[in-house]
Amino acid sequence: MAEPKLPATAYVVLGLVSVRPAAGHELAQFAERSIGYFFPLTRSHIYLELDRLCQLGLLEATEVDQERFPTKRVYELTEKGGSILQRWLDDAELVPERPRNLFLVRVFFGDRMSQERIEALLDEYEQEARQRSEQFTEIVDRLAPRPESAFRRATALYGLRREEAKLQWLAEMRPVLLAQARGEATGSGAAR
Amino acid sequence: MAEPKLPATAYVVLGLVSVRPAAGHELAQFAERSIGYFFPLTRSHIYLELDRLCQLGLLEATEVDQERFPTKRVYELTEKGGSILQRWLDDAELVPERPRNLFLVRVFFGDRMSQERIEALLDEYEQEARQRSEQFTEIVDRLAPRPESAFRRATALYGLRREEAKLQWLAEMRPVLLAQARGEATGSGAAR
DNA sequence: TTTGACATGTAAGCCGTTACATGATTTA
DNA sequence: TAAATCATGTAACGGCTTACATGTCAAA
Image 1 (cartoon, rainbow over the protein chains, first blue to last red):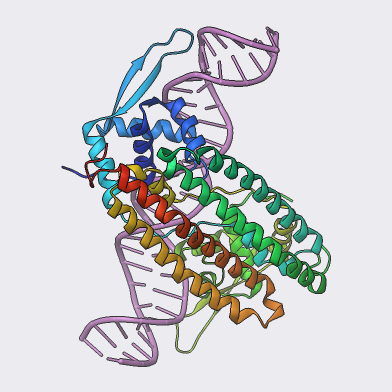
Image 2: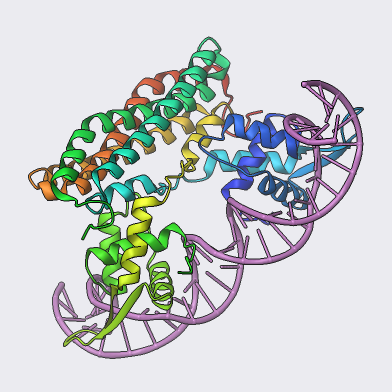
């Protein structure tokens, strides 16, 4: 009955285990591949959460010996864990998020930077966006013929659209910002 | 000489004070209005940072009496604070960020939710995106005729493009995801 | 023989949020 | 008289990261 109030991470780990029972190490790899780009998890953190969820009776661990590798502890959902997860999916409210963006902080203080610095920042940001776009495109294309992967594909497409929006923004703002920097900022270190 | 390694928040607060000297309360309001949507700061946190930056000699506080309001402590940059800020703007590397997105976590686990639940989540997300779009549009338009606000306007336009990307994604994925949910998911609470 | 995968954890510590605490002045 | 604005902080706590610690097996 007692409803423990858990951080989002706990539910996410619960959800990942529900996909398929796994040991911490496997789980960390799966998490990185599957939800890593919108919910990063460190290995250490995963081990801590698995431990807590076990103590709360939401997960159950089984030691599994392996021939050529160390013994691993495989976790799976308990009945209680399943219903807690389901309730979170069904009922938990969606809190609007306001993630930090230090790139935009730099842009905000753009009038204090040299034109060269601004250009370097924009270039770096663009390169990163292009790389990510390619990665997302690859995933989206790979999952396209698999209707059962529709939800997963949707998250990758979200990532792609986001990166495309960055590139669009860069294309339209680059000339404006550089012109502004040319006209306004003094050389690096002498801004005022 | 000793370079204290500070969290990003400290540099941001330093940057805000550099725009114009201010007391904690004023700063909190300014922060919310200006960089709030890409770098949220709580009042408490601001007070803590101001205190630390003072102790490090990067800020200087002056008590200012007011007629009809309590005395306030106005902070301004010291010379050392100015050069530390400038070095951060000029040299600090841009760490690629991977912010969390719990909405995408829900989508990822979409095959465990009812069609109604998914629709509700998408509706909520869309409504929020529309609201934010309007707000960003307003800011972008207001700052358009002011070339000296180019950088600030650029951050708002970034926000607008991001929200537009969300709406685009919603438009293209909504039918797909709902169709998938119709075909696959059982009613709420009975998923497996 | 060294690198890399596989595997599991502990410990320290900061960052940041939430809740608490206080009090003057103006306006509804 | 209640609520809102102005104003400043403290305390507790949890979340999460980083660094540390250990060990086997396979491949280069």
